Length: 428
Image (tube, rainbow, N blue to C red; front, side, top):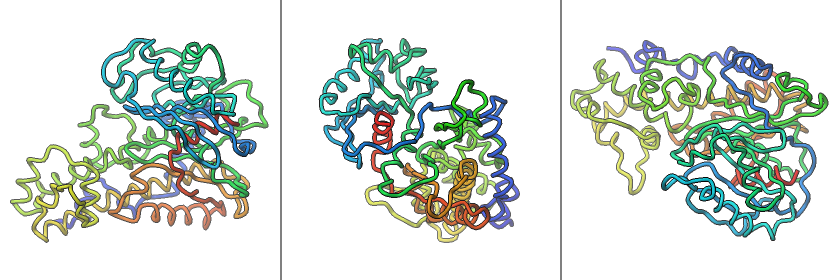
């Protein structure tokens, strides 16, 4: 009978120790260059038309909206990060279909509520749906995600439309990953960073970084001496080899073939991938007949349950189906040898693509002026099956500091990073 390690390798699952870090970094860099040049690439490399130059005015306060899920938030945000007058309410279109006026009215009302307390001339809006960003920091909505039903808004420039309802003004619209990058500036203090990276690893994943304008050849007329943030849409990278389990999991998703890299590292997919591994292992005879029979009846597995099981952690008030299925100690031992590699691989792949973005923007990144990486998201901070964040840092130390003398820091976690970043976009 195969060992768990042999079983994984036989099905194309490359364990963390065997991943060719340098080859994958090169693939990421190649896709980034193609995307910046307007050539066919799995990375969209979307210009955000906002930079990171300048210092944030001390004590500045901005009126901010944050929309990116089934709820939206509004507040006054000041730097150093302080959020006041926060209000949460359902995202228009999340409870049923709405028209134009019904959609924009709640946003306009909230800006009117908080605007009198702001000192920044612009409003900040973190708008995290599928949209094209414009040079004047507006966003043209391509399509809705996350169940929002407001069809008349598709194709509109949401910032322009909102300002119409306010009778004028200025607004800076950014997506959540760009905002997460900008939030790193809130941690500067007296420090100087050579560049910035924003990274989200929660239910999904994405990365933004700062690129020199002269390298963004697909956009004409940019100041060649300037720079701007690029939203890479890094979850769409399609050059990383996948296992049979990844392919089987992907085929069962609502969007098969979409965002293959995201599905190897993000929280929405680690549990489902683990379930594919367990079911295939049961058919291969790696588990007892009782465990195999129970596995056959499981339709879905959440990542939090795979995470807790692999860590041998029993969460208070939450029953874990895997504790029941693998009640036999021998089954549990085999299952953990199959499940933990899912998290180990995710951590190494996370580090590899962060290393690529650091290398792309790493000129002058020495110990005195390192690259600032602002990481956000529950998968990055709350994975306990392995020491996830520590593993990423260890890998980055080897790939960047030891091999290339490129220095970086993981900045202190910024609470409410999308709101803070949207405020900074309005202030700069």
